[in-house]
Length: 272
Image: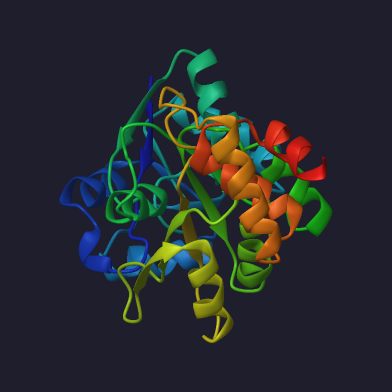
């Protein structure tokens, strides 16, 4: 029985393609690719002659049987357009079907945009939560972020250039002025890394043309075991924030992150 290989491919710089990945693609009977035109260029560059078949979001369920049939006779490699397949890209259903049919599923490690952005962000890496792309609709995005306000882990999001400013605005309003690391065009000619507070990041990217895909690494709610502020200190911080003109929801998010109080408790005191 064949093995299904999940082969990581470069996220920009072709020099990141590993010798093992090249050999695995050459020795497979079939390569299932998210975009055959994109992967075709990669295969041509490395002189890989293995046949290609498309496997993307809108045909992935129909293609499972095709891939399983090939696996009965030999190995198959799954690749996405960039990075590790099945991570925010089609692949989960195929992996599950291959395992259920008794095939081995083996990763060929390599480039990964979320992990690369995390480790250079300057934020804690011991516990993190990868959340993929933020919802496109503003109301859905805000509701989603609201569910992550009290998450203590470093948060990792993907975002497109078309929505980067709006997403940063929503993060600032809902999560508060946390630390953030922004990675753009990683490993490519115009790669950029920005680190600082959300408020400063918003101002920076408002003044820059938004190009390329973004990875946003955001500070989680600080350690829940830390000493919580006394109520008098919280009240003073609330009054100072209101006098400075902070929006109540944004003030509540910021003080929850700084004080150890739950956001809803801070907001109640702001309203009172």
